Length: 144
Image (cartoon, rainbow, N blue to C red; front, top):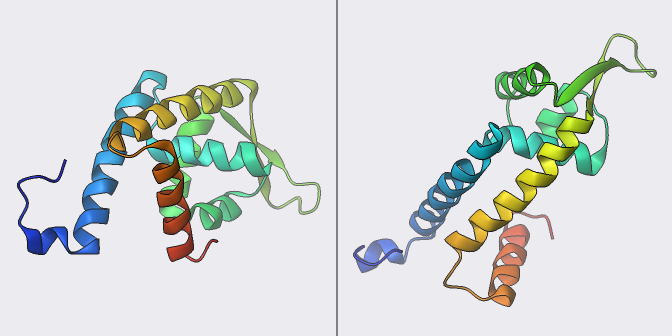
């Protein structure tokens, strides 16, 4: 996939990660379009399904996105009735985001589409190499 690029660029981590990022985003976006959700919307659903109800602010922190981005993501999910905003029993001033039945179904179907997209992008690596790549990237980001 990177053939034709000059060796000095192939030696730069920023170049390699940037290209891989773009290829992965494009492949995921193409797959998730079948469900009419974007990559960030599916990521938000995945966090909520995996970790349970949380405030919009907490979702933004967990996803590593700014307030403006998370508002747009949540509004789109709410509009499609994939999430609901419910009053927090602990703090009546804030809302908890909960995933609807349709949201759970969309997240599950999307998870398969994302896995298929990743498999296509990483076609040159076998399963253990893919797992190792994820492990190394997680460690580099301080998550493992």
